[in-house]
Image (tube, rainbow, N blue to C red; front, side, top):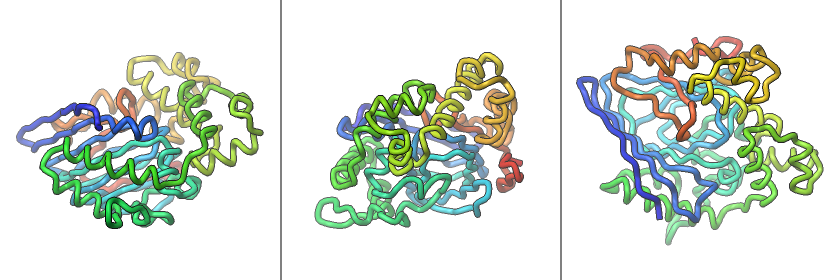
Amino acid sequence: MTSAVRVRSGQGAWGAWETVLARPDPRLRPGVISYRGIRLNLDRPRRRLEAPIGAATLLLGFEQPVRVSRSGRAPVTLVSVYSGPTTTPAVGEHSGRLSGIEVLMAPWASFTLFGTPLYELIDRTIDPDDLPHALATRRVGDRRNTVRELSAALASLPTWEERFGFLDDVLVRWSEAGTPSSARVVRAWSELVRTWGAVPVRSLAEEVGWSVRHLENRFREQIGLGPKVAARVLRLQRARRLLTEGRGQAETAAICGFYDQAHLSGEFRAMTGCTPREFTMARVIPPVSQPGVPTVDRMTGEATSLLLTSGRSAVFSKTGRVR
């Protein structure tokens, strides 16, 4: 059963917003990390930059579409959205009206649910019903369910608690019918997350009893990223949190294992589309075009997102920076 929910909400001349955070059924944890219910009814469009994190995201949209842009890829407009592990930033845009449930998963849990080698989904944003091994092949009760049907069923329920409970039941059944993840991959991933990417790949391979090559191959299949690239994402995730807590760039670089401040800055630009200073300043001073609406990060306690000025679509430079 889903743990008790936490509700945050606000209302003003600009509209109303509500987010509801809940922990999934213990049978789904630690693979399924969290549920977040979303309901926005704002008077203007909203744009948000999403930085890479060590997780996959499934947005079960109830009605209104979102437009997602990534450097080097054509924008996509979808109601429900799957985003696997990423190494590049994305910008999500919507009209100001949005509702649904966002499911945050460890990459290996995403592999179990979808049965798709995750290297095929790196840095992509797609309709989950278009996956090669879509959830349409999973049976729930007496009938087949697509993500579209699941989203509609969730939207029809009267309370968030009922929605989360129903989602628990569905994901438990899908998980039990899915492709099992390797226990060694889960163990190696957990150690990489625990150390924020600091453990050497060779030590990781020795820890689980595999060769480095075999570990890399299984990671690409069930995590999507190789262990070295995954470590980069986790190091930068930690760096963003430390910077937004007020740590200096030189200190953050040393704590997180970067060679120096320049190395940190280069990784930051490559994976977030902005400099460390631009990111931290935008977290402190949100755009005046988004009054009263807080930045809601995908992972509790992490700095994953930025509100951007509304009014025009996202444009990426050749270096991947948001303009």
